Length: 111
Picture (cartoon, helix red, strand yellow):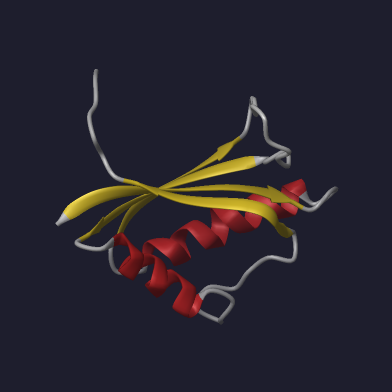
């Protein structure tokens, strides 16, 4: 099976940063990692954002999931199948406006 990275650029609603981080760290990462094909998850607070020639929102957080699958879309479909359910509740502090989700396939590395 191949390894992929699934990167999510997200943000909280104004004034709900603490609630958002708490939900993400204490609940959401574990819920996503229970999905078949999700190997690991790391959640980061954004420290710098530089955007070129694009009117992009200010993302407050970056999540990097490591996936293992023949087809990464099947893993994403597994996440979407339970997203918003009791198995993976969403937080009202999440602002999905402008959220970006990208799957990367390794091409090369150094170091």
